[in-house]
Length: 162
Image 1 (cartoon, rainbow, N blue to C red):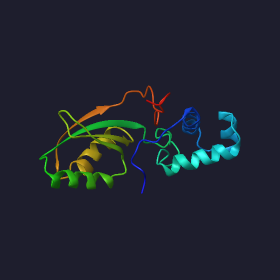
Image 2 (image 1 turned 30 degrees about the vertical axis):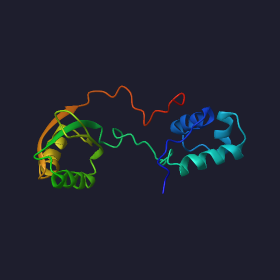
Image 3 (image 1 turned 180 degrees about the vertical axis):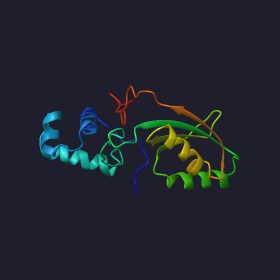
Image 4 (image 1 turned 90 degrees about the horizontal axis):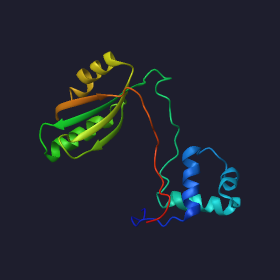
């Protein structure tokens, strides 16, 4: 089981995390050159960061537009009721929907915010009717269409510990 206390990161750990976010395919030797250390301590630091859960996984960032699903929508969802049953039903249902790539439980006028990728507006209309619209716990939704992505970064690493 992972330790729930906040990991202590030094400047080298932060440099390693920043470099890995830009290119997680670097070899240990290449990573070591970026942070000006030898391979062995860098390898040990990366393993510690993985074990502590700071590095949760490695993944490829896919260009959805090149694959034909570049129409991005943020959809705010209001549930019919705020019961445990409705919340769990909604969470379970959206896990099975491939077009939904992110989901956040939020405060304010809505309960959840979804990030969705589809082909185009017609595909989104079908998606709402045939996938979101059939989730019984959904009361209402509000869609925001992305005109242009200005900045996209997977994570942010603090520049200093605080």
